[in-house]
Image (tube, rainbow over the protein chains, first blue to last red):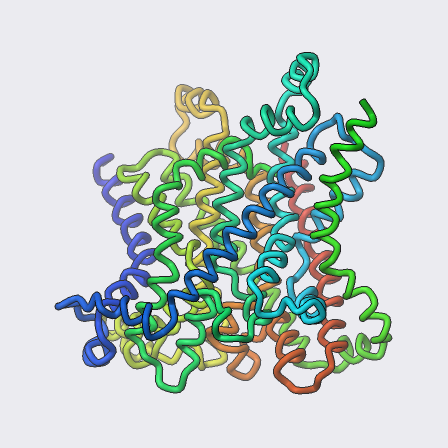
Length: 275
Length: 281
């Protein structure tokens, strides 16, 4: 009876797995087949595999530049949002820094998580145009960092608030300055939570589309999500090449996640998401 | 001491403030040019806006419920360490890792009339009569998109809920087991109530996320057919950049109205869900 129930559960879970992963596997298979092969039979196996399509995406379709754009923008915005976010969260989370107006300010930050980005899009477009930051990686970096700052602060604040005051007091008795306490003591303790936000933000920035589609108008400045979108946009849809482009744009995150998922879950379990 | 505090806080808050406020500084003076005429038109006459609101709200409620219930069920199984749980956990999360254009295109293919996986599967099991062009029939277009977001975000909710379940002290579960509680009782009377704050947070987060939905619609249907999948966000962008009215005031007014609605709904939702929580304990 027990064995039977376990079998039933496993079958259901495997079915769910097929549903969750199937679409991506199908794309992966297509990315190794040429468009003619795919049009002949959409569900065939990649025999022989056409690895040269990845080279072609690189040389003929400009994926080297798109990949570089994505990497620069993602890493740049992560550095900014993590450092400013951790500092702000620290100030918001610790009882020592309960300055006047802190709570209203935090409510303001919380509300800005709810802001539909479209509210800011129009204003942002004007603003960036004024400073010549349309089509620039720097522009995107600043926008991304600002957009994800509220959520980062929100997550990290809960974590910093949990750290006992005694640790901080002890360090201060030993003569540590505010900076030393923050960098040498608090940041290492909060590291699991910080890693979680880094991974989360990495996924978000790498895949960001809404801001990019409005703020990037030149071909050479496109990030990977835009590149994929524009491969679709042409009159003749090159299904095979599209699949290859999609693989290029998703593989880095998936590989990264497979390696970091233990960390990610650990950081979450330690209270980063309890809000 | 106070001086030190101020010196530490000041740069922190300045950094924070700057990146935060430049965003909307511009927005403030733009509304002043608009006046109230736009607001009246949007609320009173704009039928497309009304349709977009309805679509977005349907999406928000349906997707929030589906994603979280499914995510919770999956998390519970992982919590009890079914065989292969590590493997499942990583695989189920992968849809979250893809960008909306990638997800959108994959599902465009899945829903393709001639060779998409959905129709092929239906024909394979002899239900070929049910095969249809999912995304270009008004009645099925929005449900199809809801299926896609559910596919995408269930894994995320699953991971967060799993973390919440692991944070529950193991003794509660063990104690209940000793007292003879079955699997169903442990789940329904211990795990779910104790994970409730996380469930509520996720529901609100998911709801808010759908209120901002833009990219998926943009890639898959552009709001069609016949406004069936128009969301407020796509409508704003259409009015701003694609209808060639060159009037940024009107879409901005839509955005403002929408923010107020979303804010009100989120607060209401928080209140409602939390009050019920109070009664339960």
